[in-house]
Length: 116
Length: 113
Image (cartoon, rainbow over all chains, first blue to last red):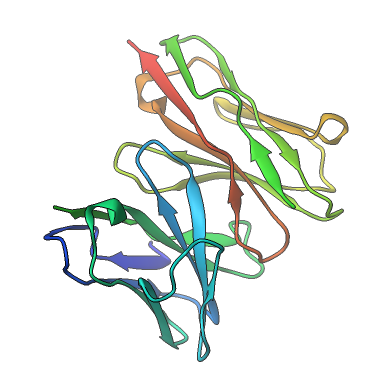
């Protein structure tokens, strides 16, 4: 069964809307989660590392005020795309690192965000 | 810094042909992990294999096989007797312990019936 649940799977909304994406670790406590972004026909690029109870760590070039990350519990991290614009349209996917597993990072199924 | 290079952007093969997807990596770490993922059109990442830097044994799983060669920093993936269902984007990735994965740019494989 799924180890990581990511919702919603698809969002289509108007420019200027804020969109919240949830990433839940179902079987493991996660003090850290990773958020990746994938533009069409491109690779997955790390956006930020979500840290439970503290501020997220953002990769260079990622606007922290644009992409708000909250990791308030050991099982949930949220990514909010604020005032989304068409250039934010992308595939967002989270992952949960799992110690001692042959699959050391479990990925959510991703969220396809389309801003009109 | 870590880097993964997948030089093949797109590959098309006819069903039942064998196909090899190349992956070359760079890292300064002595302990690292290599991965292959499959991403079908639906978008989710399907884990295929993990290999740690101390284990150079090649692995076979059904029609899939992997060739890890530290001497050339390569971790190539071969699909034998390809099938239409193998059509997807395949990513090679690298990390060090519990750090985020560094992905290659992916190879889009199209298997034609």
